[in-house]
Length: 434
Image (cartoon, rainbow, N blue to C red; front, side, top):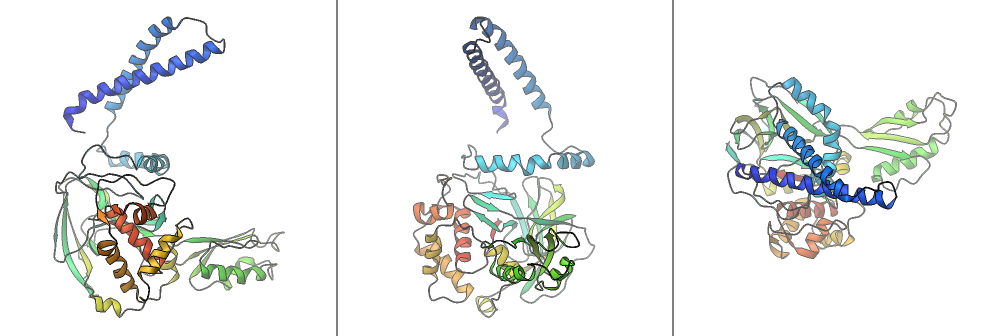
């Protein structure tokens, strides 16, 4: 909020506190009277309650105004505070963001800011000012974060693994086919702990923490049907059920490991082996092995970059042609399928049917992607607009965009394309980029 509104803002808060406090006391007073607990007159209550509310509200506002809203100078205190409030940030704050994500912003903002959750919103408005200055030897998008888990109300990052990357003196200049090594320098018009990156970073001049997508875990019910598991996990479950009913010996964990597919690891088996009840096993939990080159979700600075402060990096930027993409194989490993083909069971069937119809007779994934892009960009009758209503909370937002409104901005177009590509077997993820 602009600074010249600050006096009216505090006046509004004070009046709101008084009204809410007064209303609460009157309601309690009436309830006490009706229950025979309190018999004194309301006039006396009025004289007592209003000064107390005013005094209490004033104390709250003074204390709130005195609490620092920016990071304190002492890094140790700041890190301790971040760890102390982490349960609140990952719990209540995320729930609050999801509940109120559909409320229209009343002011222009410099841009979109992306966290672990990307909810579908209604009307948005940007201020129009420049927020990123970039110098790059190769043209590229500036990626902030990717999302792998689709829900009817938005996207989630999924479970990640964080690893600190120290600064090295010399960038890695290894030659990589179809990738161009590009020097890049970015200057942000706002404080940020998120690193906007272009391409596959090989060197950056500040310490960063990289988040990679953690392999998915699967719990196999050795007494149930396991209908919601990937096909290869279901096949493995069907194989293990007779082998563990009962196990051949009490060394159950070793027996399970010997029978694991090459891309799975054992996490847990319950109740386990070498105990009195080793003959009756109930659940088996496995997870995928990590890829040799982990799938990066986001980069973030160890210490925030300040407004107008520049940072430098070297990245490999793709230089791939259509013919190059068409010549590639498209056999997807299970790690990719787990994350980037997964869709909720609640997704309306007509979304999948439309996707199949658009890509009918098309075999290669690149051509399927181009067919869906053409539909959303040209032939489907869609309109770009930031002035839209919020999607209904009891329906699917992509379905609402595709069939009910056909009006939206980048979040909706990108989400529709990602979901439609997954519907026809093309692994896709939702990016947030500038």
